[in-house]
Structure formats: C-alpha cells, structure tokens
Image 1 (cartoon, rainbow, N blue to C red):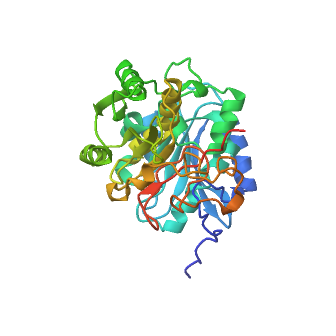
Image 2: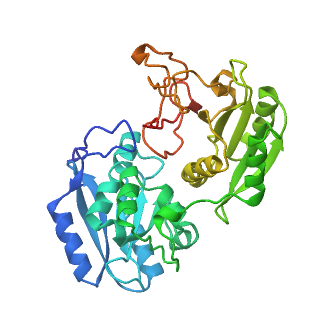
Length: 378
C-alpha cells in the first residue's frame, strides 16, 4: 500500500528562521562514522518525521567526478534532500561539500522547510568542516562540471548565503573560510571596496557637484564601480535609473533639498534589484550593500533614507523624502521625534524586513519596495 507522506512541521514564515528540525540519532552516528571511515564518500539526508535522517550511504569507488555522479543519481525529481560529499585532497575534518537539492517542482512548503533547516545541518556537521556548497534545482545543475564552474568558491559568495547566525558565529571566532583556493583574508575583511572613480563621485555628490550617483558591483573583481553621475531632480533620477534597472541591480545615491526648505541636502540610498536578476547576483549585491553604505559614510555622505526596490513603479518621490521621527530605514525613533512615543508620524511602507543583510524577497503584498531597519544610535 502507498505510504503516507513524511510528517513535516509547519513551514516557517520567514526563510531566515530555523525550522526547529534537528538531527536524528542515526544521522548523528553516521556523521561520526564518516569522519573515521575513509571508505564512505558521503551520505544522502532527508527530512522525515520532523528529523534529519540518513537515506543512503555512498561508498568511495573512484575519483571525485565519478563518485559525485553516482551520488547525484540518488536525487529524486520532486523531493528535496541534502547530500554530504567528501572532497579529495582536503585536510580532514574540513573536507565536505554540501549539496542542497531543492527541485523546481517540489512543493513550496517543502522548499521553505529545507531552506530553513540547512543551518541546523551545517551545525551538526561543523560549520568550518563544510568547505564548499552547491545549490541545485535542476539535474544539470547537480553535476561535477557545474560544481567546478559554479560552486560557492569565493569567501564573498560563501558569506552571502550564510544565515545571520552563521555570519555572527564566524565573525566572533575569526574563522577562516576555506574555499579550496589559497587565501589569507578572513570573513570580516570581505569589503567590496569602491573604485577611485566611485569614491570621487560620492565625494563630489557630498560637495554638491552631482545630484545623483549610480554604482554597481563588478563580480569578477568584487569591487564597486562607478556607473554614472548626473544633475537633476527626482524625475531625471528615476528616468536614468529606470533605463538601467532592467539590466542588473544598482546602488544609487540621490541628493535633494530638504522638505522644509532648510539648508543642505538630504540623501536617499536606493538599492534597485529587478526580480529577473539571477539569484547569485541578488545575493552578491545584498552582501555588498553594507560595505557600500559604510564606504559612503566614510566619504562624508550622510544617508537619510534607505530603500530597496524590485519594480520601478514602486519608487515615488515621497519615499525618498525623510519623515521626521523615522530612522533612514523607516523605523520610528521617539528620540528623533522629540519624545512623541508611538503616536509619532507613520510614514513609509508597512512591509519592513527584519535583520541584517537579507536576500531580496519575492512578490508579496505591495511588492517592490521595502525599508530595511537599522537600530538608531544610542
């Protein structure tokens, strides 16, 4: 008779939240065995009855490519799983490739549960023991060639797909990310530095020579490069950005006179990220964003409003104007509002992303624009 589907907990509403699923006793035992038994190439892991369980063990037969091909034969068309695969030439215990197989045709609930359980699995394996990761939704993405070409092999990419808790633990321990490439940098030094042209343009913006500056990330060099500088108001700014938005993400700094007609200018930082951008590009830009803002602050650019947009139709002039009593990211700060408490102004959008650097989210409610919270200074 047909067996009932495996029991799963309710899918988390936020992909950054843990699912509450832990390792079963047999998985814990298997993780001990594979570290000691070199003849085991890896294991296939699935979620059943609210636990991570071992579904298959892989015996080492040949080289990495041959054994990896055998391992990928275990993947099912519509059922997610994890595959822990031992890489040759690594110093144990830091020798593991973690494959996250989440097929396109899997149920959305399953996708969410597996995505929110990856951190728990890596904790069981040992964060530093997972030296590389491969995420696949199609069979042609789960090949050895795809791994060598597209696996997460730079420290910036490794950082971009880590959960907030993973990043915090690695920063606290000053742990080096071993990606298989000889490097001496540490996780806290991934900075995406600004080019000299980009720095000069932001300095000129601060001096009033430009009204808006647009920059982008060079994926090959992991640096931030200048795209263009312009003079003009919001209409000109939106028109220029709209012409570039369909191509790839952009960071923009838009300066304008304050709404009260006072001296100086206010600055809005706009992170535009079209929905059509590849996932890897979205993650890279999301990771680099903090470094760009930090560099701008170091050049004297005081950002008053921070926005994230997915659709240009969601960008309006009102959103670029600071609201009294609000932090740059849209949170209410009673100190900035003169102690008005919760009765202060309520401008901005209701949708607010919680936490640090987040991947751009898909459609939901009023899609396209969010304000990302930052804590006000003490």
